[in-house]
Length: 155
Image (cartoon, rainbow, N blue to C red; front, top):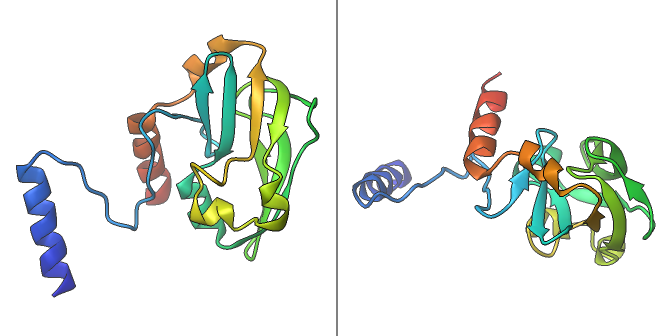
């Protein structure tokens, strides 16, 4: 029955020109930019809020600890600034942009599961004042990132 209703919903969505994803595929957010190491950046002027994607948290499993940098730390595009520890693995978090950390999400110290439950909102990790806003151009948009994830999962 569930398969039939999913098929119906999919047909209805295609008829209405709405895109749908099975839960097997993680969600992406339109206005964010994405790195191939599965971090997202929300760009506002010359600052960027950074976190890990739904795809990344889904593969990690339940997050039990987040290693956060200090405010004032310099980060470099593509380089690690912290780590996320889950029941399955520990994974480095790379910065999608270069700059200086201006805020860290202290909530993650006591509630690391926010990364699982709200990866794009309450589970943000750091805010960075970007030193080079042109770096954003090298990041993927939501459509490119969705395709990247589909191809990666196919291997």
